[in-house]
Image (cartoon, rainbow, N blue to C red):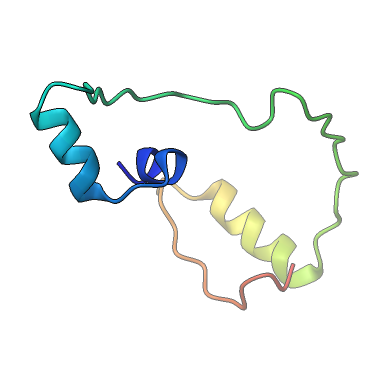
Length: 77
């Protein structure tokens, strides 16, 4: 409903009254969009792991478990 309010430059009460009196019909519709459809995305080059990261990777890849929780600083690479 906020989209209608912006386009019509009218409040919710006015729009509801118009709907109640049969002047407008409000239909909700979900629209799926792909935000990347018109963007060209270039792949980064492979990053090298430091020794601690490589050790963690090796231990995880050899493990029988499928889920892991890795502690560290977010965004620290």
